[in-house]
Length: 438
Image 1 (tube, rainbow, N blue to C red):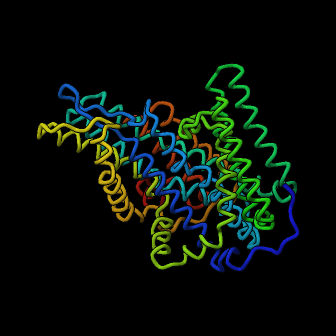
Image 2: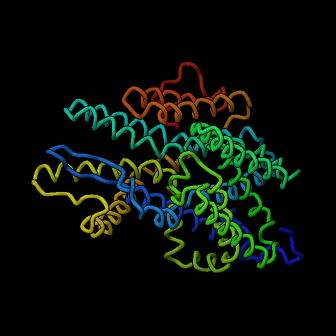
Image 3: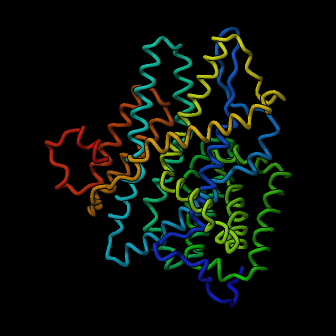
């Protein structure tokens, strides 16, 4: 692709004076809702021989393929994260802010709500065990809860590296993006040649960092200056390439399978998303400014992390209550993927959205309350990021149990402590105080 000689971004496409972009905010909100819907439709619960069985309803089905094409929004979410982060870092730099302070603030914003959620989930798991719930069910609940936490760890990593990668983008944008894309594809190639699937988890860094980097091109106006024809051709080529990888067997047509571990297919999805967004951005912007659309975007964007962190506990609670009700009344729960199951999905999905929204309203204060001034000490910031990432990895690798949740909470509290200037973290400060501030 070459950059065409065309006018700069329109006034509608330019960031709003407040630093917010209504179209991007609306798309981010849609992405968050898409994640909730995707996870909700994958919940399967039945009762077999008097015992509840929780499973992934999409396992071994064909319907997950078209559903994943509609609801696999993570590539767009990371592009948006790159867009927003790039502009935020640029504004902060113009005010004289340091890269360390930028990262420390990101640690506070991401880890603060998470430490509360993980602490409460750990306490609930303990209560379930004390109440006599079978140990295997508690283990399943902890495992299912921990699965979506990969996003917290990866997003924290991406945002932590954003100042460095934004500087690299300013100096050599194409080279930096190309290096990340080549690294991601090299991991895919090495994984295919060796048959070692574990190698694919290296792309938890390269794929998502590349998608974040693509967002920088949207933020600096590069994509907007491309001709419409160029953007159409780019999007169509990515879509054709995606189909070719599906038909040739390089990548699975199930885009959910391509996320664990991430593959280069997500890069092509991201280009398709980016092309569509750039081509229809004026229309998206106009629609996003309508009162109801604006209210929806404002509601979700104010609670993005809260919704993400709490939607899985809500879904697990719904599944548990369904099983309890079935056991108490003797009713039969529909088998996943059956006609009866599909007929109940609209109500199930609507309930999941409503309860998640209610939980988000009740718990928003942990995400929106003022954070202490971020530290500017590079070593403290590095320690904060390391502590936060270690806590998340612990939950992903070992599962969420009472013990791992406790250790993770301690690690995240330490991350929050390091993310503040040292003079604000006197040795005599109590853990309760740190939790209140976090």
